[in-house]
Length: 371
Figure 1: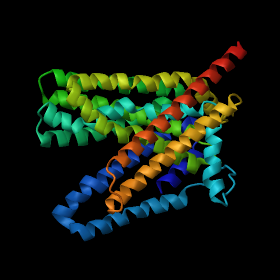
Figure 2 (figure 1 turned 90 degrees about the vertical axis):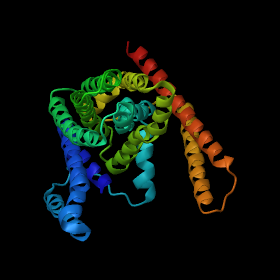
Figure 3 (figure 1 turned 180 degrees about the vertical axis):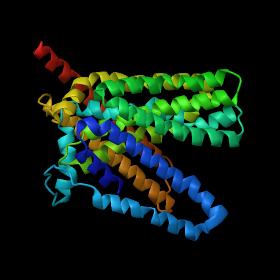
Figure 4 (figure 1 turned 30 degrees about the vertical axis):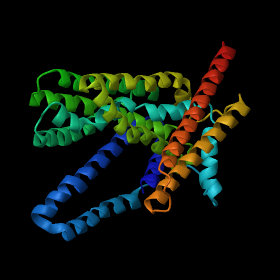
């Protein structure tokens, strides 16, 4: 359902409305999480019981069904895929053959990396690191943080009506990086409830603005002929940073302590901003003309990076298979899964670095020809 909705909003929204559309998406998602999470638990515990609460949650889908029936179809004349190749293979091929495709993929992974690092241990930091009461942290971090995220997303959507996509991503990216200093300040000053509330509000406000611009970026990078598959690919890649920073964040806190860790989260946002600068012309072309230039240089080099990337994915899939076999008691070699994971990640990193390098060299050569 998420994939279909993401594809629909990508196809139906014109470029100038993508920021506002992204903001409304964030608003709806956050409110839905609040209603189906905290409110549903409260109703089940105090008044309705579980069966009636589940019926209520089912009834809340009725307005969504009515809105779906009223929603207009996109104006695009996309060809309906009739095979797995047309539905999956062609959209991936279309994306990876674009100019600066590897730079864009790396930008998607790294753009919110600093924000992900800061958010991964927020509750632990406020309770164990600073010493706030768990009830106060739950009230401020969840309630005020949610409100700040919604305000930030809506305000970011309003600002994006007057900004280009690149400028919005850059301004909001800088803000969400600098806002992590609020947690650093909280770590080096005496704890006060108002200082915690201020840090949580500022960080979530700037993070919400960055999220609105980031969702608009994903919509901009989708070819409307393949919007469902490409948005699913890009949104999955955007989750890579959020998924893998948790263990690394805990290790860094043990190594450095809380103040240095939150100072590092600011620096962790800089690679994404640097990649954003390198992708400036590509993003402006995609937003203004909704066209994607195909690459014309280093065909052999790109083929090798793609092959290396596919091999890395295959090794990761083999790693997952060995984990499943171990869980079922069919595999007893303890060191093999770890070695497969490390090898797969190394191959993926090598492929991405190679693709980014080729994109950068090709971009420099094209700029030199224009001058």
